[in-house]
Amino acid sequence: MTPLLEVKGLKKHFPITKGAVIPRKVGAVKAVDGVSFQLEQGKTLGLVGESGCGKSTTGRTILKLIEPTEGQILFKGQDITSLKGNKLRRLRKDMQLIFQDPFASLNPRMTVEQIIAEPMKVFGINKAARRKKIDQLLDVVGLSGYHKNRYPHEFSGGQRQRVGIARALALDPDLIICDEPVSALDVSIQAQVINLMEDLQKEFGLTYLFIAHDLGVVHHISDQIAVMYLGEIVEYGHYHELYEHPKHPYTQALLSAIPEANPHLQKERIVLKGDVPSPAHPPAGCKFHTRCPLAQERCRLEKPIMKTVSPTGQQAACHFVKEVGHGDRFVVPK
Amino acid sequence: MNQTRKKKNMNLLIGTIILLFFLCLMVISFFYTPYDVSKIQVSDKLQSPSLAHWLGTDKFGRDTLSRIMKSTQTAFFVGAVVVVIGLVIGTLIGGIAGYIGGWIDDIIMRFIDAMMAFPGIILAIMIVAVFGTGIINTSLALGILTVPSIARIARSGFIQNKALDYVVAAKAVGVHPMKIVFQEILPNVYSQLLVAGSIAFAGALLAESALSYLGLGVQPPDPSLGQMLNEAQEYLTDDPWYALAPGVTLSLLILGFYMLSNGLREVLDHRLS
Image 1 (spheres, each protein chain N blue to C red):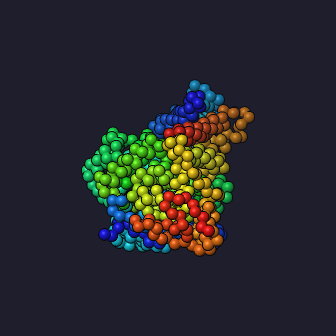
Image 2: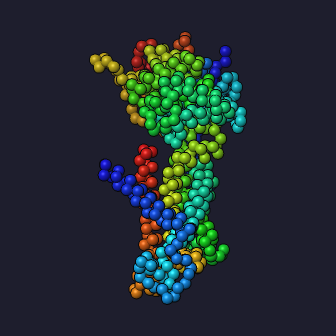
Image 3: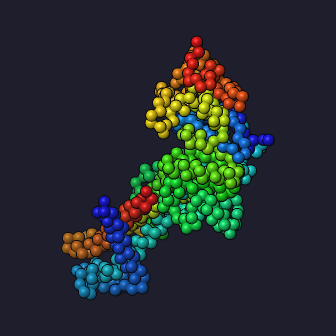
């Protein structure tokens, strides 16, 4: 079966230019630097990583809101990388986006009804059908009919996010790219929205690319998880396996940072040194070597490739991945 | 907090009252003025305010109140034309520059900068000198001069809004770029443009008076506040009423528009935040 979405070697480099009159390229921010993954119909892929690692850019490039520099995007088996104009517009019906900031993502001058109706207007759905669909969508996302004529500023963050979800669902898309949909919400509201998204997935057979920096949230909703660092996927695997047996030292560090509900549980916390290096000048070799507690000479020189590290298909890009065994934390190679 | 809220509304309230008063005066002047505005009655010249002539008479014995009423027509006409020209062209140019960005933005904005570098009134005098005097030419000249400042405000509004997620959302469903500009972003820039428009109105009134004062604006016998001030100038010490009436009228009008714009800004900002 062909996956719903397949991304092959996706790259997005933003040029850095100098000179006001005749701009010349002096470098590039490698926001996304060779990302590949597959996503099957009805599944959820969690994409995690620190701020600035290229998660959102990956999402927006797949939606073709940003032109990719290199690589291929296959949607339902069709190469959409170079689609333009009307063909691209038709494609937009099948992929939608849910945003991080529910305050910026809704037009403050439009009523909820207008906001949800907009995608349907673009695709020429008539007024009666739009009305019916809006009522249905509001019901599905847990809002009431009388909310229709209100403006976004009259709602709370969680309610606004529900409006955003209703808009994303208006055209019955197959794929929804969720760009940190709950990170701007209170924890109690986060759970509500996540549960809603799960229910909707079951009801409509949706496929999610779920971008987040919170591993707890991702664990809850994802089937597969990909961990990104500086524009590259460093580890990929089934959510359970990845959480129980992280192979890449970066994943291990991220997982050790999840807060624990039990205050008496002593956890070994791996604190990474320094900041994420600039994506304009990524380190040579393994991009993580500047902060990696395991780093050796080899890491500075040679770039590790993704290799399958378990029978279930978990993959990691680390030279020492075999030495980091099940259950062990760090075994520094001799 | 409560105090400041009240004060904010006061701006809007007083500004609106002043402007409504003059607007009524203007509407009445279409149907009725106490005396004929251009009827010369030399025997009544340079009178102080009296029951017969509430605001006195000018050097030809024409009734000042009637002339002020009539000149509000000119003032509002010029102001309205200027604001409409400024808002329509300014928003279009600024919107294109802001939304598209890149080298188009650079070229448009350098052009706007060049226009702004000229002292406005001198440019207006130049335009009037080339195309001739008269109320229409004055309005057009002043309208063109309002374009740069409005264009800048529109541009900054569009730049601010185009990066917001709701615009990305519209793009993601494939909304046509023209619709994004006019239906999505423009309503969010309205409030800023409204404030800029009311300030431009006040500026236009002042500029029109200045041009008329110099004899380059509205031509006699049509009355205009600037022209009346010019005529009154030589009688300033002996007959202060002559200059005071049009002077106070002009000041009040401008004050009204500034208070309106301040009030609008506060009220609109308050609601949006």
